Length: 213
Image 1 (tube, rainbow, N blue to C red):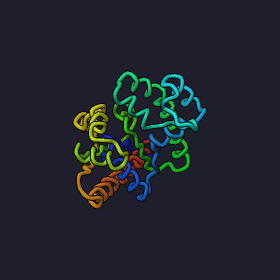
Image 2 (image 1 turned 30 degrees about the vertical axis):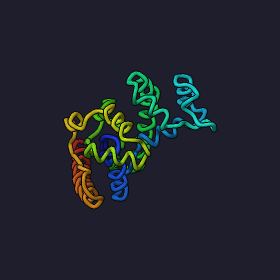
Image 3 (image 1 turned 60 degrees about the vertical axis):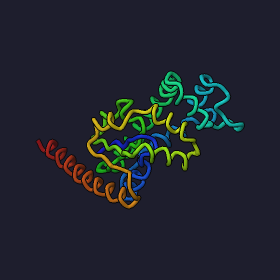
Image 4 (image 1 turned 30 degrees about the horizontal axis):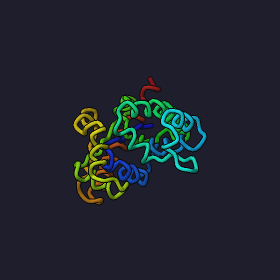
């Protein structure tokens, strides 16, 4: 099994790449989707968020208002750290559970861990390969405006709270530049996936050779 970490700044194309790779046969473990599942009403993480951040981050039906929580933590590094302390260990545990399940079912799988904080948490060290998606700040701000309805100032605040592309590139094995058309990113993503398949086969053969020894 080849475990690949996929990360990048907000609105830089991670989701687009992971969906292309899903079509190509990869298994996708989405950290953000896991986080959404973990904060369903009356779960342990939900209870802890309520205790720490109060009622104002929830809708009337008890569901988490992600935009309100985001506005709260992006402007306050201390609160952002508290949020990560609550969610990250639980997300990591669930990712490991899913990874183990996939490995048992399909030992030759290529598994993509799609995680925005892959590098910040240090989890990238556990990956066989790390891929970074990049984009211009102008494109990120425009995508955030269209996708999430945030204004330019709020988008800039979100970007400023994240690790820079330059820092992330230091640990990247591959980079997918998402500054052009969908067809261009699709072409780059497919090209890199072919390389990942080659690396996965190489890893499998090495393991077989080691067993023979």
